[in-house]
Image 1: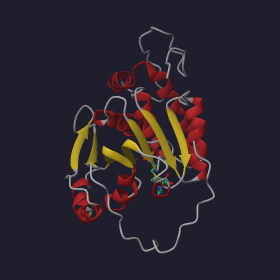
Image 2: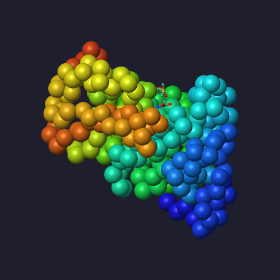
Image 3: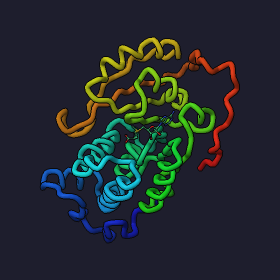
Image 4: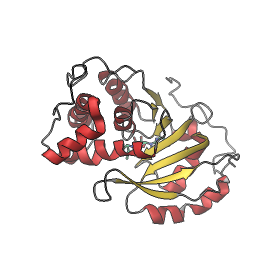
Length: 257
Ligand SMILES: C[S@@+](CC[C@H](N)C(=O)[O-])C[C@H]1O[C@@H](n2cnc3c(N)ncnc32)[C@H](O)[C@@H]1O
């Protein structure tokens, strides 16, 4: 998409990124925000403000998160760009208020992102945010559960933060990854235990690669821990599911973008 027009922060064409961040930030954080979002820093600030206002009012973000929106939410999510190839397609499942999909899209104008979220309230917020941030050419929004959009959407990278433990997430997300692509899940210190607990699920799916724990961002202290799983090139097997004998009714949400 074109980024030539003045954006939320009013960045005129050709002008270096100004310090337009909202919220109180120190110089170090400011320069990291400028480094990561470049000439989209104004739009990143608009998104931060949306989370701090409408996001909190509508119960999508806890009020205690407001002082740490920049580092814990926008930057930590944007760092996923370190493990996303140039021109990749990204499906962010359980996007909530747009995390990690929106910061990743803002930091990486070369990737196409689709946010998938089942809850109406969050889905509505996502559509409004994408319009407000002028990201409609780069970011699509769909309403649905990850396990229900199989066959409809797929991407070279599927992302998720705080959606489900890996043992559940593998079954939801890996069928949405195209062959040769990756699942990239933001996980904290629990990553090794979650990987161990989910090893059988990966085997049942027929995925032979070993999950990797990768630190993204500038350093271990301020960066983000992700679990990256290569989908491989072989077919995936279905997981046994208790409800599989009963045909699933389509949810009330059939509207897709
Ligand atoms: C704790 S929130 C995390 C939201 C966001 N990823 C973040 O990090 O702020 C979990 C989100 O996953 C969504 N979710 C729950 N089950 C899901 C499923 N089966 N498929 C897709 N999303 C799901 C919820 O609606 C919710 O928005």
